[in-house]
Amino acid sequence: MIDDKAIIQYLRRSYFAADGLWFTKLEEEHSYDDALRIDELVWEVLPKIQARKAKELLNIEGGSLPDLLRALELKFVAESYQYQTIELTPSLLRIAINECPWLNILQKAGKIRCALDICENVCTRDFAGWAVQFSPAISFTLGRTLAAGESICELVFNCSQVVKTLPHVDAERDAAG
Image (cartoon, rainbow, N blue to C red; front, side, top):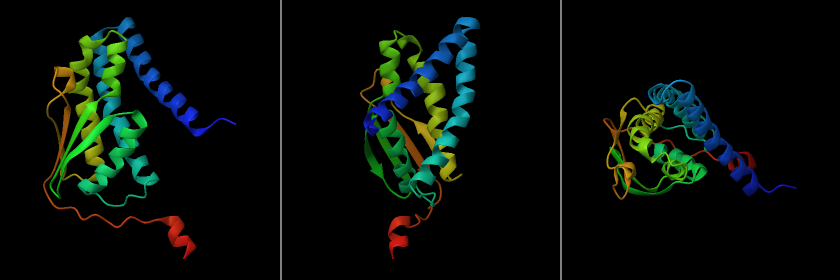
Protein backbone atom coordinates (compact mmCIF):
# COMPACT_ATOMS: atom_id res chain seq x y z
CA MET A 1 0.00 0.00 0.00
CA ILE A 2 1.24 3.47 -0.88
CA ASP A 3 0.93 6.05 1.87
CA ASP A 4 -0.69 9.47 1.42
CA LYS A 5 2.62 11.29 1.90
CA ALA A 6 4.15 9.51 -1.11
CA ILE A 7 1.07 10.28 -3.21
CA ILE A 8 1.18 13.95 -2.22
CA GLN A 9 4.90 14.21 -3.08
CA TYR A 10 4.31 12.48 -6.43
CA LEU A 11 1.39 14.75 -7.38
CA ARG A 12 3.17 17.90 -6.18
CA ARG A 13 6.26 17.04 -8.23
CA SER A 14 4.12 16.26 -11.29
CA TYR A 15 2.23 19.55 -10.91
CA PHE A 16 5.43 21.61 -10.81
CA ALA A 17 7.06 19.58 -13.60
CA ALA A 18 4.07 19.95 -15.94
CA ASP A 19 4.03 23.72 -15.41
CA GLY A 20 7.75 24.05 -16.06
CA LEU A 21 7.87 21.68 -19.02
CA TRP A 22 5.13 23.29 -21.04
CA PHE A 23 6.67 26.72 -20.43
CA THR A 24 10.12 25.52 -21.49
CA LYS A 25 8.85 23.72 -24.58
CA LEU A 26 6.80 26.74 -25.68
CA GLU A 27 9.83 28.95 -25.14
CA GLU A 28 11.96 26.58 -27.28
CA GLU A 29 9.39 26.47 -30.08
CA HIS A 30 8.44 30.16 -30.06
CA SER A 31 9.94 32.67 -27.64
CA TYR A 32 10.25 33.56 -24.00
CA ASP A 33 7.71 36.37 -24.47
CA ASP A 34 5.18 33.96 -26.00
CA ALA A 35 5.69 31.46 -23.18
CA LEU A 36 5.23 34.18 -20.57
CA ARG A 37 2.09 35.51 -22.30
CA ILE A 38 0.51 32.03 -22.41
CA ASP A 39 1.59 31.41 -18.81
CA GLU A 40 -0.27 34.58 -17.83
CA LEU A 41 -3.41 33.34 -19.59
CA VAL A 42 -3.21 29.97 -17.82
CA TRP A 43 -2.74 31.62 -14.43
CA GLU A 44 -5.78 33.81 -14.99
CA VAL A 45 -7.95 30.67 -15.11
CA LEU A 46 -6.23 28.10 -12.87
CA PRO A 47 -6.60 30.04 -9.59
CA LYS A 48 -10.34 30.30 -10.15
CA ILE A 49 -10.54 26.52 -10.42
CA GLN A 50 -8.25 26.03 -7.42
CA ALA A 51 -10.11 28.52 -5.22
CA ARG A 52 -13.50 27.02 -6.01
CA LYS A 53 -12.17 23.53 -5.22
CA ALA A 54 -10.57 24.74 -1.98
CA LYS A 55 -13.90 26.28 -0.92
CA GLU A 56 -15.65 23.00 -1.67
CA LEU A 57 -13.08 20.80 0.09
CA LEU A 58 -13.00 23.02 3.17
CA ASN A 59 -16.76 23.70 3.23
CA ILE A 60 -16.22 27.46 2.96
CA GLU A 61 -19.40 29.29 2.08
CA GLY A 62 -18.40 32.83 2.97
CA GLY A 63 -16.42 35.41 1.06
CA SER A 64 -14.50 37.22 3.80
CA LEU A 65 -10.77 37.68 4.21
CA PRO A 66 -10.64 35.00 6.95
CA ASP A 67 -12.39 32.64 4.51
CA LEU A 68 -9.87 33.50 1.81
CA LEU A 69 -6.98 32.93 4.23
CA ARG A 70 -8.33 29.52 5.19
CA ALA A 71 -8.53 28.49 1.54
CA LEU A 72 -5.10 29.92 0.71
CA GLU A 73 -3.64 27.85 3.53
CA LEU A 74 -4.62 24.75 1.55
CA LYS A 75 -2.70 26.11 -1.46
CA PHE A 76 0.30 27.05 0.66
CA VAL A 77 0.52 23.65 2.33
CA ALA A 78 -0.15 21.72 -0.89
CA GLU A 79 2.53 23.63 -2.79
CA SER A 80 5.05 23.74 0.11
CA TYR A 81 5.18 27.48 0.70
CA GLN A 82 6.67 28.73 3.94
CA TYR A 83 4.41 31.57 5.04
CA GLN A 84 2.94 33.50 7.93
CA THR A 85 -0.04 35.75 8.37
CA ILE A 86 1.20 39.24 9.21
CA GLU A 87 -2.16 40.93 9.65
CA LEU A 88 -5.81 39.92 9.43
CA THR A 89 -8.67 42.36 9.94
CA PRO A 90 -12.10 42.47 8.26
CA SER A 91 -10.64 44.81 5.62
CA LEU A 92 -6.98 43.75 5.34
CA LEU A 93 -5.07 40.49 4.98
CA ARG A 94 -1.28 40.57 4.74
CA ILE A 95 0.70 37.38 4.24
CA ALA A 96 4.49 36.99 4.17
CA ILE A 97 5.90 34.26 1.95
CA ASN A 98 9.28 33.34 3.44
CA GLU A 99 10.03 30.57 0.96
CA CYS A 100 8.42 30.12 -2.44
CA PRO A 101 8.50 26.67 -4.06
CA TRP A 102 8.21 28.25 -7.53
CA LEU A 103 11.26 30.46 -6.94
CA ASN A 104 13.18 27.46 -5.58
CA ILE A 105 12.40 25.50 -8.76
CA LEU A 106 13.48 28.39 -10.98
CA GLN A 107 16.75 28.66 -9.04
CA LYS A 108 17.44 24.91 -9.31
CA ALA A 109 16.65 24.96 -13.05
CA GLY A 110 19.03 27.89 -13.62
CA LYS A 111 16.11 30.08 -14.74
CA ILE A 112 16.39 32.76 -12.09
CA ARG A 113 16.51 35.36 -14.91
CA CYS A 114 12.75 34.96 -15.41
CA ALA A 115 11.80 34.87 -11.71
CA LEU A 116 10.89 38.54 -11.49
CA ASP A 117 8.78 38.34 -14.67
CA ILE A 118 6.96 35.29 -13.29
CA CYS A 119 6.45 36.98 -9.94
CA GLU A 120 5.13 40.23 -11.35
CA ASN A 121 3.01 38.75 -14.15
CA VAL A 122 1.97 35.29 -12.99
CA CYS A 123 1.86 35.44 -9.19
CA THR A 124 -0.13 38.66 -9.37
CA ARG A 125 -2.73 36.98 -11.59
CA ASP A 126 -2.72 33.87 -9.42
CA PHE A 127 -3.51 35.62 -6.14
CA ALA A 128 -5.87 38.15 -7.76
CA GLY A 129 -7.76 35.16 -9.17
CA TRP A 130 -8.10 33.67 -5.69
CA ALA A 131 -9.34 37.00 -4.33
CA VAL A 132 -12.09 37.45 -6.91
CA GLN A 133 -13.44 33.98 -6.19
CA PHE A 134 -14.19 35.06 -2.65
CA SER A 135 -15.63 38.50 -3.27
CA PRO A 136 -15.54 41.18 -5.94
CA ALA A 137 -14.84 43.53 -3.01
CA ILE A 138 -11.44 41.89 -2.42
CA SER A 139 -8.46 43.26 -4.33
CA PHE A 140 -4.90 41.99 -4.39
CA THR A 141 -1.58 43.81 -4.44
CA LEU A 142 1.85 42.25 -4.55
CA GLY A 143 4.20 44.05 -2.18
CA ARG A 144 7.82 43.13 -1.69
CA THR A 145 9.10 40.05 -3.55
CA LEU A 146 11.72 37.41 -3.00
CA ALA A 147 12.45 37.51 -6.74
CA ALA A 148 13.49 41.16 -6.39
CA GLY A 149 15.88 40.27 -3.59
CA GLU A 150 13.58 41.16 -0.70
CA SER A 151 13.39 38.97 2.43
CA ILE A 152 9.74 38.03 1.75
CA CYS A 153 6.98 38.16 -0.81
CA GLU A 154 4.23 40.25 0.68
CA LEU A 155 0.68 39.42 -0.40
CA VAL A 156 -1.82 42.16 0.41
CA PHE A 157 -5.55 41.62 0.13
CA ASN A 158 -7.89 44.57 0.75
CA CYS A 159 -11.63 44.27 1.21
CA SER A 160 -13.59 47.41 0.37
CA GLN A 161 -16.65 46.22 2.25
CA VAL A 162 -17.03 43.99 5.27
CA VAL A 163 -18.05 40.53 4.10
CA LYS A 164 -19.63 38.40 6.77
CA THR A 165 -17.89 35.12 7.52
CA LEU A 166 -20.36 32.28 7.49
CA PRO A 167 -19.95 29.69 10.23
CA HIS A 168 -17.98 26.61 9.22
CA VAL A 169 -20.26 23.68 8.58
CA ASP A 170 -18.91 20.31 9.61
CA ALA A 171 -20.93 17.80 7.60
CA GLU A 172 -19.79 14.79 9.61
CA ARG A 173 -20.64 16.45 12.92
CA ASP A 174 -24.06 17.52 11.67
CA ALA A 175 -24.78 14.05 10.27
CA ALA A 176 -23.81 12.44 13.57
CA GLY A 177 -26.35 14.60 15.35
